[in-house]
Length: 255
Length: 273
Image (tube, rainbow over all chains, first blue to last red; front, side, top):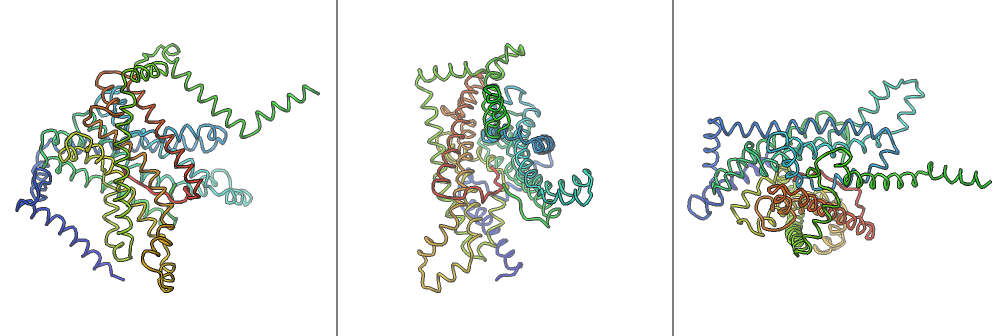
């Protein structure tokens, strides 16, 4: 059994060894910098770019698209999920269609949304909503079905009113499912934003990365990927952290 | 008498759960198809926006006559399958390697989680720099999505293996390969299967997105070309084909899962593309 300190130092060593080897290999000419830009130069260029306004505009564009699409998708999915969770027959009829829609590779819809809504912010937000919405909807339906009916009857016989049943039993049992959906959804939202920006855009990190690749500016590609990586790690692990903090008492929920 | 018989039959049709559900599903499907076909007349909308089934079908026949329908399908299928196969092999090897023992697991797990959280799809332009704009680009994009899913699902399966089982097998003199075949593989099988299910769709998404970036053929090329030329029939034909591939592949996987008794519902994970 290793203690935490040992593990973290080995992990740090691996990271340092990886990037150090990369940097060294590029410097001595073992690694072609046209394919793998040396990390130090990438970081310096990133620092330089952030001091200029345009790069931050790209970061902001991607962040705003991601968050706006995510929030709208979550609200919509949860709302329709509640409606469908309460009407059994309608849900049973709709279910195969919902699963079919869920099965469509939705990043492939990006060009359709561009055709319908243009190349601006809106078409990306629609794409992200289409990804997050159905995910949350399905998690919500499963969450509502997982409410323990015995708990509800027990509460009712003990004299709880409808409002108490909703606030004390239904919401607490459904919340972990919503959060499980949100944990997956935030990653999907970032993917949606990036795909939308690569397909057709004038802003955003996806656009920045794609433009750099087209110019043959490998360093620019790595700069964009680094910024995007930091952004996704913050968002994804932020959701993870929030989920663990709020629902540490519950077992992990997965579909 | 006859009347009450009809009434009870009617009641059965209306009340009986399965009849109502299946009937409702078929009715809804037909209604949706009719709506798709006739929405321009019904709402005065421009048929350009969603195309229509008849136009999509005509487009399919037209492409088939030109001999490019099946070749487009074949190109995307080849990219998907090669990316899928390579991603599965490498991913499973990584997953087994990371899950092999507790210290290794504790050291490498964060790397897997970071790889899962990173939007791999953004690396597509980098693959363009590395591999050019040909076949390899699409395979690489499909591979990059699949490899992380398979590594993570294999790893999750490895974590469920009970160490007592391995220890007692070892005490009784089982060799390394016996432990692998009799304990490790059966334990991680459902996880591999669940990962494969997700990977199929991911590989297809990867191939199509690779084609968005640069291509001369394939379903993604049809969609992208349709966008550039405002040819909505072409886009919707490609989307219908994509959906059909996904549905058929999922049905096939479910059948295999049932046929070989792999419990496909138990393990599921949160993957990012």
